[in-house]
Image (cartoon, rainbow, N blue to C red; front, side, top):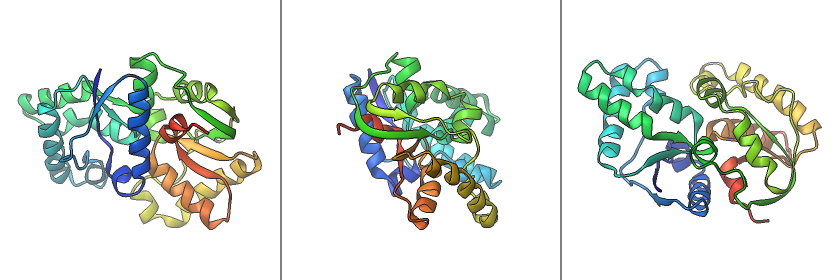
Length: 240
């Protein structure tokens, strides 16, 4: 299967190793992976901030790229960006643009759901020793219905003990511009999650969105914690 990977802004600028790991896993799964170097943003930051025209402009650039991309699927290592692409048809009024947006949305899959729902894979041959817990990122859980898939994948990683946190489904507090507008609340929400996570004795907190991991990882570093913040692609690519 030919797959085009949309790496997202944060993976590109903050955690490029996540994109590399995702490509490794997809190739291990038997996919031919391509990357379109002209890709930029899905338009979510502008859309969430209320800048509709700007979001539409960014979305048009994305649509132009993937309209020409001859891939069976577009895979995104982010629930939030995947959700935005799934909602692209709502940005437009013309039937032509709605149709194009819909065709791209239908081909777009979040990384974990692509592996499990589309390819039917659970064991990717990963090895990683230690305890880890899963954080349900808001868009992945509430918009895309991602819950069992990452846990099933983690359960097949050799050497890994999956520890379920009671607050796994609670927001980390990042929320894009929310963390900028309400920094005290954002930090308090993160610390409430991390208090429990650090008490579990885990080596890592794992999630499918770099935005959550950037926020939680930053707080872990400031707290002097040894707990890692890992994207699930990094975990599935591991051969420890």
